[in-house]
Figure 1 (cartoon, rainbow, N blue to C red):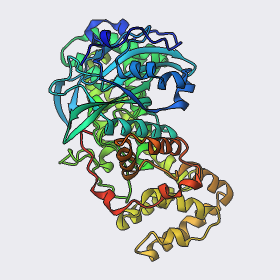
Figure 2 (cartoon, rainbow, N blue to C red; figure 1 turned 180 degrees about the vertical axis):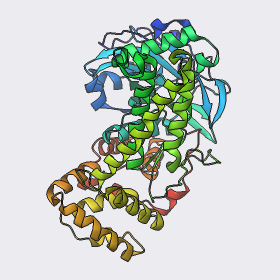
Figure 3 (tube, rainbow, N blue to C red; figure 1 turned 120 degrees about the vertical axis):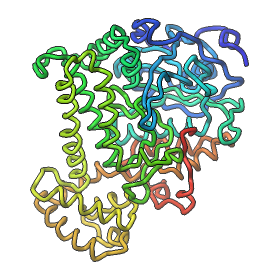
Figure 4 (cartoon, rainbow, N blue to C red; figure 1 turned 90 degrees about the vertical axis):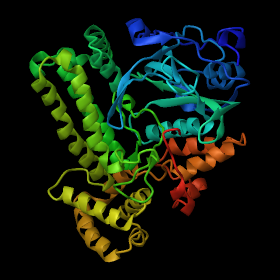
Length: 497
């Protein structure tokens, strides 16, 4: 396999100015290195919408020169490639030093959407690869490409994906697969684990430098707050807690399972990050475990809120040398306990078409979730059919989802009476904007991946269009809004995915 310097003759010009502010933090935070080239790369899929938003020419991204650049074979003018170091807790256990084991940050570009970092995932070995090979496979790269765009389409904070490139180079996972690289885009890829790394090593100067960088760039209001006696670091912890609470509330409302909520997989900006063994629920099972590697069920769907708080507590411990007062840190973390239930109830009221809060709403929400769990009702289909019921459709399509229809009937009498206080038309409009018709179900992704392995990417493109507009009807793709086939329950997604 050739080195990048041998694989390309000229730098690619993106036409966007680079800033590389993370690189300015200094070598304690990363190792500078070039990606490792892959042989004969080719385009798999390009996110034209994202390219336009950040001011890139999509045809350049998908050109052969662009493919080489976003595979890591050709340098990009102005980029400063590096792999960052961080640590973290994995499955609740301190794992020590981790870092970008298969990702290389190209740098930060100035775009019409604001500063954005570009990162290649699957671009080769780094000093932090540990026992890994530094590569990603086509299967997982397509899942991340579609998964992150599905979350964006749902309005959930997330990293995004610009493109996927492939190569016939062999990579061993559970079986032999082919290599791929996904180009990820986000304002920042800094994680809780970055702070844990320097705190655990008593590198308090570096910890402060990192915190000041993040505060000044993303949380400047923490510098002027009067809360916490003007302690900017406590205010920062509170802001991260509230962003995380809002994000996880959105996960729960849409039925999203992350699958591997380690502290090194938690974004300091409250973004959904690191799409490995994720899943959108089919049948509603609060205890569902989407990660085949999670043998203890630590990251089950209904445990995600508590895990998020546990991770924030770890972040609070890491920031304690800067906050300087344990009581202030605990007070900052308390914001999660107030923000999460408030955000979740707001999201669930919207799913029911309830614009304003009234006494009894919480019980109405809890009761229907119990009914869904008891009969293992398809989560997405239920909410979409309920939206049509509110718009005046027959109740039978909703009722037919339940084994115990009398129990649903009793709940629906209370619900429809409550809905009448809102006005059916306004409620239905809110519901159709809150309850997607399409989510990226596992079997849909699996079918697209099977075709992609044959170098047919048409299903990837079709799914991309659906998940970027999941609340629209898309009548030509009605089959993708239906119940999952029986074999879908046997799909196993693990940490190697």
